[in-house]
Length: 67
Image 1 (cartoon, helix red, strand yellow):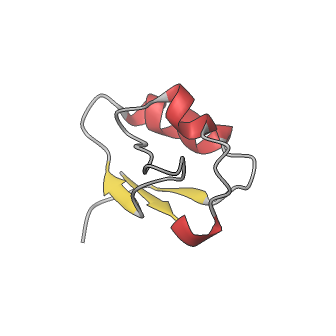
Image 2: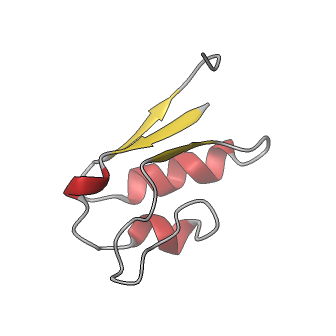
């Protein structure tokens, strides 16, 4: 599973970070610091919750095998 983030559209609500700070790091200005990541085993549910917490809906869960 992979998380893809439209980083340029982040407005800094930081709700994803509040849910899972180790998966959704913020930069010094309070915006998401990554454009995506492979979800570590066992962290899938937490990654999904972080994605759902984003009010802008700029975090996308991509299921399936890695390419």
